[in-house]
Image (tube, rainbow, N blue to C red):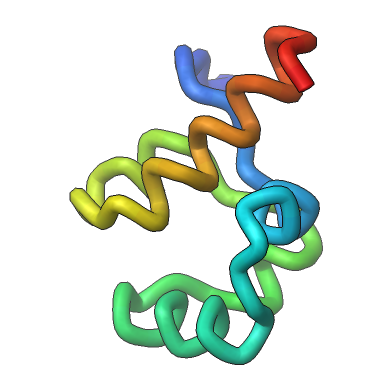
Length: 72
């Protein structure tokens, strides 16, 4: 069964849109127990990013929302 979410999937392009560097992003992923390789292949649900309560994660989700909503 497919999970329905209100937040978009975040991809590497959203990190780039927020001008976040790859090295720092990989460290952040590791600190939060996320799988960087899986993210590069599949993205990560916005809800999972927001659950970290990290302002940088919120910026990435905002970039994904803007893309989804055609606001870029």
